[in-house]
Image (cartoon, rainbow, N blue to C red; front, side, top):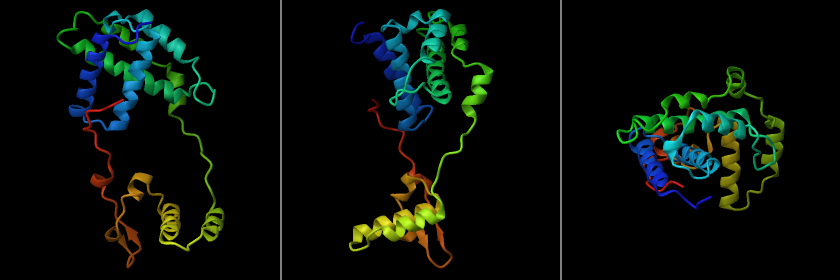
Length: 202
């Protein structure tokens, strides 16, 4: 298998630019799309994207269902669904590209779907284990507060337990965001949202 396909690399980069600056997706989402497209490209042996076909789509979906994650466990249906979605959106975009409109089998895109039952199962939420209030209190009481950093760490643990705030919002909190009079915390979404305008995506 060749190390890379120059034409494919050019198309991936153009698609990346579209996701960032037209679709305005965030960096994490674009990175995930890049990995999914790379996965499909590696599966085909770096064949030109213009060779995309129904047989490729069906074979990739079958192959994907047999892959294992880093824990040596089968890929979850949600991962399979998001991977197929990213690849599907890429080929939809490519099929509308003026230079490739007549070279891409747009109908083959529809084969990059899980079954209806699998799609429903992939969206079902599973209850995740979480610590009880008693366990959190035990942890907080066991945490040292001898230094400013230790006090900060304990405060962050307590705020997370009390509010359920996301980690990205937590690390960006400022003193002015905390209103001790009414016991509230204000989170500025613009400051905590990761930028989707970075040109370097790998």
